[in-house]
Length: 336
Length: 281
Image (cartoon, rainbow over all chains, first blue to last red; front, side, top):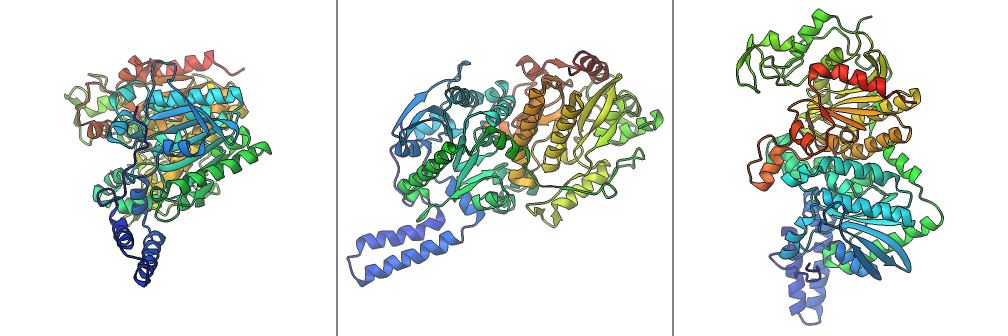
Protein backbone atom coordinates (compact mmCIF):
# COMPACT_ATOMS: atom_id res chain seq x y z
CA UNK A 1 0.00 0.00 0.00
CA UNK A 2 1.11 3.52 -0.78
CA UNK A 3 2.73 5.05 2.22
CA UNK A 4 1.53 8.49 3.04
CA UNK A 5 4.77 10.41 2.77
CA UNK A 6 3.85 12.47 -0.27
CA UNK A 7 2.16 15.50 1.08
CA UNK A 8 0.64 18.17 -1.06
CA UNK A 9 1.66 21.75 -0.59
CA UNK A 10 -0.74 24.18 1.01
CA UNK A 11 -2.05 26.19 -1.90
CA UNK A 12 -5.24 27.72 -3.15
CA UNK A 13 -6.82 24.34 -3.82
CA UNK A 14 -5.96 22.70 -0.54
CA UNK A 15 -6.41 25.68 1.73
CA UNK A 16 -9.48 26.71 3.70
CA UNK A 17 -11.11 30.11 3.02
CA UNK A 18 -9.82 31.59 6.26
CA UNK A 19 -6.27 30.45 5.46
CA UNK A 20 -6.08 32.27 2.11
CA UNK A 21 -5.08 35.70 3.35
CA UNK A 22 -2.32 34.09 5.41
CA UNK A 23 -1.07 32.28 2.31
CA UNK A 24 -1.13 35.49 0.27
CA UNK A 25 0.97 37.34 2.81
CA UNK A 26 3.38 34.41 3.00
CA UNK A 27 3.78 34.49 -0.77
CA UNK A 28 4.45 38.21 -0.67
CA UNK A 29 7.07 37.76 2.03
CA UNK A 30 8.88 35.23 -0.13
CA UNK A 31 9.06 37.71 -3.00
CA UNK A 32 10.08 40.68 -0.88
CA UNK A 33 13.79 41.30 -0.22
CA UNK A 34 15.08 41.90 3.29
CA UNK A 35 14.13 45.32 4.52
CA UNK A 36 11.42 47.41 6.12
CA UNK A 37 8.72 46.29 3.71
CA UNK A 38 9.43 42.66 4.51
CA UNK A 39 9.44 43.34 8.22
CA UNK A 40 6.07 44.96 7.92
CA UNK A 41 4.68 42.00 6.01
CA UNK A 42 5.96 39.64 8.68
CA UNK A 43 4.20 41.55 11.42
CA UNK A 44 1.06 41.67 9.28
CA UNK A 45 1.29 37.90 8.93
CA UNK A 46 1.53 37.51 12.67
CA UNK A 47 -1.45 39.80 13.21
CA UNK A 48 -3.55 37.98 10.60
CA UNK A 49 -2.66 34.59 12.08
CA UNK A 50 -3.58 35.75 15.53
CA UNK A 51 -6.88 37.27 14.43
CA UNK A 52 -7.89 34.10 12.59
CA UNK A 53 -6.68 31.51 15.04
CA UNK A 54 -7.65 33.27 18.24
CA UNK A 55 -11.21 33.57 16.98
CA UNK A 56 -11.86 30.25 15.29
CA UNK A 57 -15.50 29.27 15.19
CA UNK A 58 -16.54 25.71 15.98
CA UNK A 59 -17.18 25.10 12.30
CA UNK A 60 -13.72 26.38 11.32
CA UNK A 61 -12.26 23.88 13.75
CA UNK A 62 -14.32 21.16 12.08
CA UNK A 63 -12.77 22.25 8.80
CA UNK A 64 -9.27 22.22 10.28
CA UNK A 65 -9.86 18.79 11.79
CA UNK A 66 -10.76 17.53 8.32
CA UNK A 67 -8.06 19.51 6.51
CA UNK A 68 -6.82 17.78 3.38
CA UNK A 69 -3.22 18.19 4.56
CA UNK A 70 -3.74 17.37 8.22
CA UNK A 71 -1.07 14.92 9.39
CA UNK A 72 -2.33 11.36 9.63
CA UNK A 73 -1.48 8.54 12.00
CA UNK A 74 1.49 7.36 9.93
CA UNK A 75 2.90 10.90 9.80
CA UNK A 76 3.10 10.72 13.58
CA UNK A 77 4.34 7.16 13.99
CA UNK A 78 7.07 7.76 11.40
CA UNK A 79 8.28 10.75 13.36
CA UNK A 80 7.99 9.59 16.94
CA UNK A 81 8.70 5.86 16.78
CA UNK A 82 12.20 4.50 16.29
CA UNK A 83 10.73 1.39 14.71
CA UNK A 84 7.33 0.03 13.85
CA UNK A 85 6.51 -3.61 13.12
CA UNK A 86 3.03 -3.82 11.65
CA UNK A 87 0.68 -6.64 12.61
CA UNK A 88 -1.98 -7.46 10.04
CA UNK A 89 -5.34 -9.16 10.29
CA UNK A 90 -8.03 -9.83 12.86
CA UNK A 91 -7.48 -13.64 12.83
CA UNK A 92 -11.15 -14.03 12.02
CA UNK A 93 -10.91 -13.71 8.27
CA UNK A 94 -10.20 -10.06 7.63
CA UNK A 95 -7.57 -7.35 7.50
CA UNK A 96 -9.01 -3.85 7.50
CA UNK A 97 -6.59 -1.27 6.13
CA UNK A 98 -8.47 1.58 7.84
CA UNK A 99 -7.00 0.33 11.10
CA UNK A 100 -3.28 -0.08 11.63
CA UNK A 101 -1.88 -2.14 14.49
CA UNK A 102 1.66 -3.05 15.40
CA UNK A 103 4.57 -3.04 17.76
CA UNK A 104 6.35 0.27 18.11
CA UNK A 105 9.60 1.33 19.74
CA UNK A 106 9.52 4.66 21.50
CA UNK A 107 12.56 6.02 23.34
CA UNK A 108 13.84 2.55 24.00
CA UNK A 109 10.60 0.91 25.09
CA UNK A 110 8.11 -1.31 23.35
CA UNK A 111 4.52 -0.19 22.84
CA UNK A 112 1.41 -1.59 21.21
CA UNK A 113 0.25 0.88 18.58
CA UNK A 114 -3.32 1.00 17.27
CA UNK A 115 -4.85 3.67 15.09
CA UNK A 116 -6.97 4.78 12.19
CA UNK A 117 -5.36 6.00 8.98
CA UNK A 118 -7.44 8.13 6.65
CA UNK A 119 -4.90 8.14 3.87
CA UNK A 120 -3.21 10.97 2.01
CA UNK A 121 -3.07 10.17 -1.70
CA UNK A 122 -6.31 9.32 -3.50
CA UNK A 123 -5.13 5.75 -3.93
CA UNK A 124 -4.37 5.39 -0.24
CA UNK A 125 -7.63 7.02 0.81
CA UNK A 126 -9.60 4.52 -1.22
CA UNK A 127 -7.52 1.58 0.00
CA UNK A 128 -8.01 2.70 3.60
CA UNK A 129 -11.68 3.55 3.12
CA UNK A 130 -11.01 7.12 4.29
CA UNK A 131 -10.23 5.81 7.75
CA UNK A 132 -13.68 4.33 8.24
CA UNK A 133 -13.24 0.89 9.80
CA UNK A 134 -15.37 -2.17 9.24
CA UNK A 135 -15.94 -4.65 12.08
CA UNK A 136 -12.76 -6.42 10.92
CA UNK A 137 -10.83 -3.27 11.82
CA UNK A 138 -12.23 -3.17 15.33
CA UNK A 139 -11.49 -6.87 15.79
CA UNK A 140 -7.96 -6.24 14.59
CA UNK A 141 -7.66 -3.51 17.25
CA UNK A 142 -9.07 -5.86 19.86
CA UNK A 143 -6.50 -8.49 18.95
CA UNK A 144 -3.79 -5.88 19.51
CA UNK A 145 -5.27 -4.91 22.90
CA UNK A 146 -5.29 -8.55 23.99
CA UNK A 147 -1.69 -9.09 22.86
CA UNK A 148 -0.61 -5.94 24.68
CA UNK A 149 -2.20 -7.17 27.85
CA UNK A 150 -0.53 -10.56 27.53
CA UNK A 151 2.87 -8.97 26.91
CA UNK A 152 2.32 -6.22 29.51
CA UNK A 153 2.83 -3.50 26.91
CA UNK A 154 1.40 0.00 27.22
CA UNK A 155 -1.04 0.81 24.42
CA UNK A 156 -1.09 4.00 22.39
CA UNK A 157 -4.03 4.66 20.08
CA UNK A 158 -4.25 7.27 17.31
CA UNK A 159 -7.85 8.27 16.73
CA UNK A 160 -8.77 9.76 13.36
CA UNK A 161 -11.97 8.63 11.70
CA UNK A 162 -15.10 10.31 10.32
CA UNK A 163 -17.13 7.31 11.55
CA UNK A 164 -17.34 3.57 11.62
CA UNK A 165 -18.16 2.58 8.05
CA UNK A 166 -21.90 2.70 7.35
CA UNK A 167 -22.44 -0.09 4.85
CA UNK A 168 -24.21 -3.30 4.06
CA UNK A 169 -21.25 -5.58 4.68
CA UNK A 170 -20.28 -3.74 7.85
CA UNK A 171 -23.77 -4.30 9.22
CA UNK A 172 -23.83 -7.94 8.14
CA UNK A 173 -20.55 -8.50 9.97
CA UNK A 174 -21.80 -6.86 13.16
CA UNK A 175 -20.60 -3.27 13.30
CA UNK A 176 -22.72 -2.57 16.40
CA UNK A 177 -21.91 -5.67 18.46
CA UNK A 178 -18.22 -5.43 17.50
CA UNK A 179 -17.89 -1.84 18.70
CA UNK A 180 -19.78 -2.78 21.88
CA UNK A 181 -17.37 -5.66 22.53
CA UNK A 182 -14.36 -3.40 21.98
CA UNK A 183 -15.69 -0.91 24.53
CA UNK A 184 -16.22 -3.63 27.08
CA UNK A 185 -12.79 -5.18 26.59
CA UNK A 186 -10.76 -2.01 26.17
CA UNK A 187 -11.99 -0.70 29.51
CA UNK A 188 -10.62 -3.72 31.30
CA UNK A 189 -7.24 -4.08 29.59
CA UNK A 190 -4.72 -4.49 32.39
CA UNK A 191 -1.99 -2.37 30.80
CA UNK A 192 -1.98 1.46 30.51
CA UNK A 193 -3.75 3.03 27.54
CA UNK A 194 -2.85 6.41 26.04
CA UNK A 195 -5.22 7.75 23.37
CA UNK A 196 -4.67 10.79 21.18
CA UNK A 197 -7.34 12.30 18.96
CA UNK A 198 -5.51 13.59 15.90
CA UNK A 199 -8.23 15.01 13.69
CA UNK A 200 -11.74 13.62 13.63
CA UNK A 201 -13.07 11.62 16.53
CA UNK A 202 -16.19 10.35 14.80
CA UNK A 203 -18.72 8.91 17.20
CA UNK A 204 -18.74 5.22 18.19
CA UNK A 205 -16.23 4.52 15.44
CA UNK A 206 -13.68 6.62 17.33
CA UNK A 207 -14.76 5.68 20.83
CA UNK A 208 -14.11 1.99 20.13
CA UNK A 209 -10.35 2.66 20.22
CA UNK A 210 -10.35 5.81 22.39
CA UNK A 211 -10.97 4.61 25.95
CA UNK A 212 -7.76 5.57 27.66
CA UNK A 213 -6.31 6.24 31.08
CA UNK A 214 -5.23 9.49 29.48
CA UNK A 215 -7.00 10.91 26.43
CA UNK A 216 -5.20 13.78 24.74
CA UNK A 217 -6.69 15.76 21.90
CA UNK A 218 -5.26 18.28 19.46
CA UNK A 219 -6.47 21.83 19.81
CA UNK A 220 -8.12 21.82 16.37
CA UNK A 221 -9.36 18.23 16.46
CA UNK A 222 -13.02 17.44 16.98
CA UNK A 223 -14.77 14.65 18.85
CA UNK A 224 -18.44 14.25 18.07
CA UNK A 225 -21.52 12.19 18.74
CA UNK A 226 -22.39 12.65 15.09
CA UNK A 227 -21.13 14.86 12.26
CA UNK A 228 -22.52 18.42 12.55
CA UNK A 229 -24.03 18.08 9.06
CA UNK A 230 -26.06 15.09 10.13
CA UNK A 231 -27.05 16.70 13.41
CA UNK A 232 -28.28 19.73 11.45
CA UNK A 233 -30.30 17.44 9.19
CA UNK A 234 -31.91 15.64 12.10
CA UNK A 235 -32.61 18.52 14.48
CA UNK A 236 -32.94 21.51 12.17
CA UNK A 237 -34.04 19.56 9.07
CA UNK A 238 -31.50 21.63 7.18
CA UNK A 239 -27.94 20.58 6.43
CA UNK A 240 -26.98 24.25 5.98
CA UNK A 241 -27.36 24.66 9.74
CA UNK A 242 -24.15 22.67 10.16
CA UNK A 243 -22.26 25.63 11.63
CA UNK A 244 -24.95 26.11 14.22
CA UNK A 245 -24.90 22.39 14.97
CA UNK A 246 -21.11 22.41 15.31
CA UNK A 247 -21.20 25.06 18.01
CA UNK A 248 -24.26 23.57 19.74
CA UNK A 249 -22.67 20.10 19.91
CA UNK A 250 -19.53 21.40 21.69
CA UNK A 251 -17.10 19.54 19.50
CA UNK A 252 -13.85 21.33 20.28
CA UNK A 253 -11.06 20.14 22.52
CA UNK A 254 -11.40 22.84 25.19
CA UNK A 255 -15.13 22.33 25.51
CA UNK A 256 -14.64 18.58 25.80
CA UNK A 257 -11.99 19.12 28.45
CA UNK A 258 -14.46 21.25 30.41
CA UNK A 259 -16.97 18.38 30.18
CA UNK A 260 -14.36 15.98 31.65
CA UNK A 261 -14.49 13.73 28.62
CA UNK A 262 -10.85 14.18 27.65
CA UNK A 263 -7.78 14.75 29.82
CA UNK A 264 -5.50 17.11 27.91
CA UNK A 265 -5.44 19.51 24.97
CA UNK A 266 -2.33 19.45 22.77
CA UNK A 267 -1.70 22.96 21.42
CA UNK A 268 -1.16 23.47 17.69
CA UNK A 269 1.23 26.20 16.79
CA UNK A 270 1.25 28.61 13.86
CA UNK A 271 -1.88 27.82 11.92
CA UNK A 272 -2.55 24.20 12.74
CA UNK A 273 -0.83 20.83 12.74
CA UNK A 274 -0.69 20.71 8.92
CA UNK A 275 1.50 23.82 8.81
CA UNK A 276 4.07 22.24 11.05
CA UNK A 277 3.78 18.45 11.38
CA UNK A 278 7.16 18.26 13.13
CA UNK A 279 5.94 20.40 16.01
CA UNK A 280 2.68 18.47 16.21
CA UNK A 281 4.57 15.16 16.35
CA UNK A 282 6.81 16.60 19.05
CA UNK A 283 3.74 17.49 21.13
CA UNK A 284 2.49 13.91 20.92
CA UNK A 285 5.95 12.55 21.77
CA UNK A 286 6.26 14.75 24.87
CA UNK A 287 2.78 13.87 26.10
CA UNK A 288 3.43 10.18 25.52
CA UNK A 289 6.80 10.34 27.29
CA UNK A 290 5.13 11.97 30.28
CA UNK A 291 2.40 9.32 30.23
CA UNK A 292 4.95 6.49 30.23
CA UNK A 293 6.83 8.18 33.06
CA UNK A 294 3.62 8.11 35.07
CA UNK A 295 3.22 4.44 34.10
CA UNK A 296 6.52 3.72 35.80
CA UNK A 297 5.19 5.33 38.95
CA UNK A 298 2.18 3.04 38.73
CA UNK A 299 -0.25 5.88 38.21
CA UNK A 300 -2.64 4.13 35.81
CA UNK A 301 -4.74 1.15 36.80
CA UNK A 302 -7.51 -0.45 34.82
CA UNK A 303 -9.76 -0.11 37.89
CA UNK A 304 -9.39 3.66 37.76
CA UNK A 305 -10.02 3.73 34.04
CA UNK A 306 -13.17 1.68 34.50
CA UNK A 307 -14.34 3.93 37.32
CA UNK A 308 -13.70 7.02 35.21
CA UNK A 309 -15.98 5.79 32.43
CA UNK A 310 -18.54 4.45 34.88
CA UNK A 311 -18.99 7.98 36.20
CA UNK A 312 -19.26 9.71 32.80
CA UNK A 313 -22.23 11.96 32.20
CA UNK A 314 -24.15 14.83 33.73
CA UNK A 315 -27.50 14.20 35.38
CA UNK A 316 -29.44 15.41 38.36
CA UNK A 317 -30.72 13.58 41.40
CA UNK A 318 -34.03 15.07 42.27
CA UNK A 319 -35.55 14.69 45.71
CA UNK A 320 -38.18 11.99 45.59
CA UNK A 321 -41.16 14.31 46.05
CA UNK A 322 -40.22 16.33 42.99
CA UNK A 323 -39.81 13.82 40.25
CA UNK A 324 -42.78 12.70 38.32
CA UNK A 325 -44.07 9.35 39.42
CA UNK A 326 -45.72 7.59 36.52
CA UNK A 327 -48.96 6.41 38.04
CA UNK A 328 -51.46 3.98 36.70
CA UNK A 329 -53.65 6.99 36.00
CA UNK A 330 -52.53 7.48 32.45
CA UNK A 331 -53.61 10.56 30.62
CA UNK A 332 -54.17 10.51 26.92
CA UNK A 333 -50.83 11.62 25.52
CA UNK A 334 -51.06 14.33 22.93
CA UNK A 335 -49.38 13.63 19.64
CA UNK A 336 -46.12 15.48 19.08
CA UNK B 1 -51.80 -2.67 44.77
CA UNK B 2 -52.13 -4.01 41.26
CA UNK B 3 -49.97 -2.12 38.86
CA UNK B 4 -52.61 -1.90 36.21
CA UNK B 5 -55.98 -3.50 35.96
CA UNK B 6 -56.94 -5.33 32.83
CA UNK B 7 -59.58 -2.96 31.54
CA UNK B 8 -57.38 0.06 31.80
CA UNK B 9 -54.51 -1.82 30.27
CA UNK B 10 -56.39 -2.22 27.02
CA UNK B 11 -56.96 1.49 26.67
CA UNK B 12 -53.41 2.39 27.71
CA UNK B 13 -51.95 0.04 25.18
CA UNK B 14 -54.17 1.66 22.59
CA UNK B 15 -52.97 5.14 23.35
CA UNK B 16 -49.32 4.40 23.87
CA UNK B 17 -48.60 2.99 20.50
CA UNK B 18 -47.77 3.92 16.96
CA UNK B 19 -51.30 3.17 15.81
CA UNK B 20 -52.96 6.08 14.08
CA UNK B 21 -56.29 7.24 15.44
CA UNK B 22 -59.55 5.87 14.11
CA UNK B 23 -61.65 2.78 14.35
CA UNK B 24 -59.89 1.10 11.48
CA UNK B 25 -56.26 1.28 10.58
CA UNK B 26 -54.03 0.21 7.75
CA UNK B 27 -51.45 -2.29 8.94
CA UNK B 28 -47.93 -1.43 7.75
CA UNK B 29 -47.24 -5.17 7.57
CA UNK B 30 -50.09 -6.60 5.48
CA UNK B 31 -51.39 -3.25 4.16
CA UNK B 32 -54.88 -4.43 5.05
CA UNK B 33 -57.50 -2.46 6.93
CA UNK B 34 -57.70 -3.96 10.39
CA UNK B 35 -60.02 -3.22 13.25
CA UNK B 36 -58.03 -1.22 15.75
CA UNK B 37 -59.48 -2.78 18.88
CA UNK B 38 -58.45 -6.19 17.61
CA UNK B 39 -54.83 -5.07 17.39
CA UNK B 40 -54.99 -3.49 20.81
CA UNK B 41 -56.36 -6.61 22.41
CA UNK B 42 -53.62 -8.60 20.74
CA UNK B 43 -50.70 -6.89 22.53
CA UNK B 44 -50.33 -4.45 19.65
CA UNK B 45 -49.70 -7.23 17.17
CA UNK B 46 -51.64 -7.40 13.92
CA UNK B 47 -54.01 -10.38 14.12
CA UNK B 48 -53.68 -10.99 10.39
CA UNK B 49 -49.97 -10.71 9.63
CA UNK B 50 -48.41 -10.59 13.13
CA UNK B 51 -46.84 -7.18 12.48
CA UNK B 52 -45.43 -6.03 15.84
CA UNK B 53 -46.32 -2.40 16.50
CA UNK B 54 -44.10 -0.33 18.76
CA UNK B 55 -45.19 -0.28 22.35
CA UNK B 56 -44.54 2.14 25.22
CA UNK B 57 -42.54 1.18 28.30
CA UNK B 58 -45.42 1.02 30.77
CA UNK B 59 -47.67 -0.88 28.39
CA UNK B 60 -44.78 -3.29 27.80
CA UNK B 61 -44.29 -3.79 31.51
CA UNK B 62 -48.01 -4.44 31.92
CA UNK B 63 -47.98 -7.33 29.47
CA UNK B 64 -44.63 -8.70 30.62
CA UNK B 65 -44.47 -8.85 34.39
CA UNK B 66 -46.57 -10.53 37.07
CA UNK B 67 -49.41 -8.23 37.91
CA UNK B 68 -48.47 -5.55 40.42
CA UNK B 69 -44.90 -6.77 40.72
CA UNK B 70 -43.07 -3.87 39.07
CA UNK B 71 -41.35 -1.56 41.50
CA UNK B 72 -39.74 1.34 39.68
CA UNK B 73 -36.37 2.57 40.90
CA UNK B 74 -33.93 5.38 40.23
CA UNK B 75 -36.53 7.85 38.99
CA UNK B 76 -34.52 10.46 40.83
CA UNK B 77 -31.95 10.23 38.04
CA UNK B 78 -33.09 13.03 35.77
CA UNK B 79 -31.85 14.76 32.69
CA UNK B 80 -29.85 17.99 32.79
CA UNK B 81 -28.77 20.21 29.92
CA UNK B 82 -24.99 20.60 30.32
CA UNK B 83 -24.53 21.81 26.73
CA UNK B 84 -27.34 24.38 26.99
CA UNK B 85 -28.66 22.97 23.77
CA UNK B 86 -31.29 24.86 21.88
CA UNK B 87 -33.03 24.32 18.57
CA UNK B 88 -34.75 27.53 17.58
CA UNK B 89 -36.56 28.70 20.69
CA UNK B 90 -36.96 25.28 22.26
CA UNK B 91 -34.41 24.28 24.87
CA UNK B 92 -33.46 20.67 25.40
CA UNK B 93 -35.09 20.54 28.82
CA UNK B 94 -38.34 21.85 27.40
CA UNK B 95 -38.25 19.05 24.89
CA UNK B 96 -37.63 16.53 27.65
CA UNK B 97 -40.52 17.92 29.70
CA UNK B 98 -42.80 17.59 26.72
CA UNK B 99 -41.68 14.02 26.18
CA UNK B 100 -42.28 13.32 29.86
CA UNK B 101 -45.86 14.47 29.79
CA UNK B 102 -46.56 12.83 26.44
CA UNK B 103 -45.18 9.50 27.50
CA UNK B 104 -46.03 9.82 31.20
CA UNK B 105 -42.55 8.62 31.95
CA UNK B 106 -39.60 10.20 33.70
CA UNK B 107 -37.06 9.18 31.02
CA UNK B 108 -36.65 6.95 27.99
CA UNK B 109 -35.45 4.06 30.18
CA UNK B 110 -37.50 2.79 33.11
CA UNK B 111 -35.78 0.42 35.54
CA UNK B 112 -36.83 -1.45 38.62
CA UNK B 113 -37.58 -4.78 40.25
CA UNK B 114 -40.18 -7.09 38.79
CA UNK B 115 -41.32 -10.70 38.79
CA UNK B 116 -41.77 -12.55 35.53
CA UNK B 117 -43.63 -15.85 36.00
CA UNK B 118 -42.68 -15.79 39.67
CA UNK B 119 -38.96 -15.17 39.10
CA UNK B 120 -37.63 -11.97 40.58
CA UNK B 121 -35.46 -9.91 38.27
CA UNK B 122 -34.16 -6.45 37.64
CA UNK B 123 -35.92 -5.10 34.58
CA UNK B 124 -35.13 -2.19 32.28
CA UNK B 125 -37.52 -1.12 29.54
CA UNK B 126 -36.95 1.56 26.93
CA UNK B 127 -39.77 3.61 25.49
CA UNK B 128 -39.54 4.27 21.73
CA UNK B 129 -42.02 7.14 22.10
CA UNK B 130 -39.82 9.06 24.53
CA UNK B 131 -37.52 11.05 22.22
CA UNK B 132 -36.99 7.88 20.17
CA UNK B 133 -35.59 6.23 23.29
CA UNK B 134 -32.34 8.03 22.68
CA UNK B 135 -29.57 7.56 25.24
CA UNK B 136 -28.37 10.52 27.24
CA UNK B 137 -26.68 10.70 30.64
CA UNK B 138 -29.81 9.89 32.64
CA UNK B 139 -30.52 6.78 30.56
CA UNK B 140 -26.90 5.65 30.91
CA UNK B 141 -26.88 6.25 34.66
CA UNK B 142 -30.17 4.42 35.16
CA UNK B 143 -28.84 1.45 33.23
CA UNK B 144 -25.74 1.38 35.42
CA UNK B 145 -27.79 1.59 38.61
CA UNK B 146 -30.04 -1.22 37.42
CA UNK B 147 -26.92 -3.32 36.78
CA UNK B 148 -25.67 -2.45 40.27
CA UNK B 149 -29.02 -3.51 41.76
CA UNK B 150 -28.76 -6.81 39.92
CA UNK B 151 -25.27 -7.41 41.33
CA UNK B 152 -26.15 -6.42 44.90
CA UNK B 153 -29.38 -8.40 44.97
CA UNK B 154 -27.97 -11.32 42.97
CA UNK B 155 -30.79 -11.04 40.45
CA UNK B 156 -30.63 -11.37 36.67
CA UNK B 157 -30.96 -8.27 34.52
CA UNK B 158 -33.49 -8.20 31.68
CA UNK B 159 -33.47 -5.23 29.33
CA UNK B 160 -36.09 -4.58 26.66
CA UNK B 161 -34.09 -2.37 24.31
CA UNK B 162 -35.34 0.14 21.79
CA UNK B 163 -33.54 3.21 20.61
CA UNK B 164 -33.06 5.55 17.72
CA UNK B 165 -29.49 6.01 19.01
CA UNK B 166 -27.72 8.72 20.92
CA UNK B 167 -29.37 11.72 22.55
CA UNK B 168 -27.84 14.31 20.27
CA UNK B 169 -28.65 17.20 22.60
CA UNK B 170 -26.07 15.87 25.06
CA UNK B 171 -23.30 15.76 22.48
CA UNK B 172 -20.16 13.94 23.57
CA UNK B 173 -21.70 13.02 26.93
CA UNK B 174 -24.19 10.87 25.13
CA UNK B 175 -21.32 9.17 23.26
CA UNK B 176 -19.65 8.47 26.59
CA UNK B 177 -22.76 6.59 27.74
CA UNK B 178 -21.74 3.82 25.36
CA UNK B 179 -18.53 3.29 27.31
CA UNK B 180 -20.31 3.76 30.60
CA UNK B 181 -22.98 1.14 29.95
CA UNK B 182 -20.42 -1.27 28.47
CA UNK B 183 -18.53 -0.98 31.75
CA UNK B 184 -21.73 -1.81 33.65
CA UNK B 185 -22.11 -4.95 31.53
CA UNK B 186 -18.51 -5.86 32.27
CA UNK B 187 -19.32 -5.69 35.97
CA UNK B 188 -22.36 -7.93 35.44
CA UNK B 189 -20.16 -10.42 33.60
CA UNK B 190 -17.56 -10.45 36.35
CA UNK B 191 -20.28 -10.97 38.97
CA UNK B 192 -21.70 -13.83 36.85
CA UNK B 193 -25.10 -12.17 36.70
CA UNK B 194 -27.17 -13.38 33.74
CA UNK B 195 -27.97 -10.48 31.43
CA UNK B 196 -30.72 -10.92 28.86
CA UNK B 197 -31.56 -8.34 26.21
CA UNK B 198 -34.63 -8.21 24.01
CA UNK B 199 -34.13 -6.05 20.94
CA UNK B 200 -37.33 -4.40 19.78
CA UNK B 201 -38.21 -2.01 16.99
CA UNK B 202 -35.97 0.00 16.53
CA UNK B 203 -32.66 -0.83 18.23
CA UNK B 204 -29.99 1.20 16.50
CA UNK B 205 -26.96 3.47 16.87
CA UNK B 206 -25.17 3.95 20.16
CA UNK B 207 -27.52 1.75 22.13
CA UNK B 208 -27.06 -1.15 19.74
CA UNK B 209 -23.29 -0.54 19.76
CA UNK B 210 -23.16 -0.76 23.54
CA UNK B 211 -25.32 -2.47 26.17
CA UNK B 212 -28.03 -3.73 23.82
CA UNK B 213 -25.59 -5.92 21.90
CA UNK B 214 -23.75 -7.18 24.98
CA UNK B 215 -26.40 -9.51 26.38
CA UNK B 216 -25.40 -13.00 27.47
CA UNK B 217 -28.57 -13.97 25.67
CA UNK B 218 -29.94 -11.74 22.93
CA UNK B 219 -33.57 -12.10 21.89
CA UNK B 220 -35.46 -9.99 19.38
CA UNK B 221 -39.02 -9.31 18.35
CA UNK B 222 -40.04 -10.30 14.80
CA UNK B 223 -39.45 -7.66 12.17
CA UNK B 224 -37.65 -5.24 14.49
CA UNK B 225 -35.17 -2.86 12.87
CA UNK B 226 -31.78 -3.67 14.38
CA UNK B 227 -28.52 -2.14 13.24
CA UNK B 228 -25.71 0.31 13.90
CA UNK B 229 -26.02 2.83 11.08
CA UNK B 230 -29.60 3.64 10.16
CA UNK B 231 -30.83 2.37 6.78
CA UNK B 232 -31.37 5.88 5.41
CA UNK B 233 -27.83 6.87 6.35
CA UNK B 234 -26.43 3.82 4.58
CA UNK B 235 -28.61 4.41 1.53
CA UNK B 236 -27.46 8.02 1.42
CA UNK B 237 -23.79 7.12 1.85
CA UNK B 238 -23.71 4.28 -0.64
CA UNK B 239 -26.30 5.56 -3.10
CA UNK B 240 -27.68 2.05 -3.43
CA UNK B 241 -30.99 0.41 -2.75
CA UNK B 242 -30.76 -1.74 0.35
CA UNK B 243 -31.64 -5.42 0.03
CA UNK B 244 -35.09 -6.56 1.12
CA UNK B 245 -35.21 -7.35 4.82
CA UNK B 246 -31.89 -5.61 5.56
CA UNK B 247 -31.33 -4.94 9.28
CA UNK B 248 -34.42 -6.79 10.41
CA UNK B 249 -34.35 -9.07 13.43
CA UNK B 250 -34.45 -12.00 11.01
CA UNK B 251 -31.44 -10.63 9.11
CA UNK B 252 -29.43 -10.21 12.31
CA UNK B 253 -30.53 -13.70 13.41
CA UNK B 254 -29.29 -15.18 10.14
CA UNK B 255 -25.99 -13.37 10.60
CA UNK B 256 -25.50 -14.87 14.04
CA UNK B 257 -26.14 -11.89 16.27
CA UNK B 258 -29.40 -13.03 17.87
CA UNK B 259 -30.14 -16.20 19.80
CA UNK B 260 -33.84 -16.43 19.10
CA UNK B 261 -36.63 -14.36 17.65
CA UNK B 262 -39.54 -14.39 20.04
CA UNK B 263 -43.10 -13.31 19.29
CA UNK B 264 -44.53 -10.77 21.71
CA UNK B 265 -47.10 -13.27 22.97
CA UNK B 266 -44.27 -15.72 23.73
CA UNK B 267 -41.94 -13.25 25.41
CA UNK B 268 -43.26 -13.64 28.92
CA UNK B 269 -43.12 -17.45 29.03
CA UNK B 270 -39.72 -17.37 27.29
CA UNK B 271 -38.21 -14.95 29.78
CA UNK B 272 -39.95 -16.80 32.61
CA UNK B 273 -38.23 -19.99 31.56
CA UNK B 274 -34.80 -18.42 31.11
CA UNK B 275 -35.03 -16.72 34.50
CA UNK B 276 -35.90 -20.05 36.14
CA UNK B 277 -33.00 -21.80 34.41
CA UNK B 278 -30.41 -19.09 34.98
CA UNK B 279 -30.88 -18.07 38.57
CA UNK B 280 -27.62 -16.42 39.73
CA UNK B 281 -25.66 -18.69 42.07
